[in-house]
Length: 294
Image (tube, rainbow, N blue to C red; front, side, top):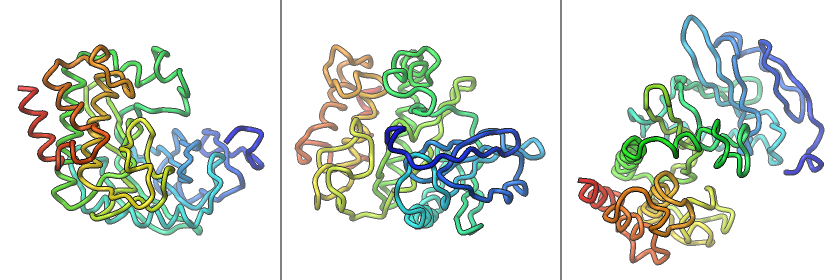
């Protein structure tokens, strides 16, 4: 939403950290968890996030029930979506996924506590929106794209390994994009976050062209009402992620590709518009990727 379309904005401060909502909300319960050191208040998902510290430990709290300035839906829908995400995090617990610690109802809302990870989001639109993401030397995405190719391929390998696990568990990845990736530039570590929309297979696109996800990562069927969303869809997403991290993002030309011809051939097949021309499963895609890599 443009600024002029926003509803009333309320300025709030917790532990010297200021943020904005559409209306006042009670967050006094956060004191039991720790001291707030950062707030993520510009999420169009309707959630608001808090970084908290206590006794040399850090936590991330995702909360549904307030009214962030960039969300214009019903907070009850946000609470419902967060509730549905709980079994997803429980069943997909993995070393490459941010770890859920606790979850509970509080003050007409719902809170989920995660372990804190010292990484930076590759799609930090709240700090580097628009073209700044791609051209600002301080942008996490810009810095990541300028890392050694082997470090970036290692991150892709971790992403693919996790999603093969997701597939084996009978789940389909929904709304996975570069905003789901946290990267620790100091220790070269990666974690995947925000898998709230992952669902048990089979599922279909029940929304249409506005189906969850970033345009640069979505398969053609994720724009069409009633189409299946499955392993072949996820194969496209993983191929698109390769182009995003070691190629020209939505420009799939070889001239923008940085990882050699064999890997390019795997990524191109993965992102075929015709579902039947892609790899059938993430496992098949990953095996082809590993073979080309080695």
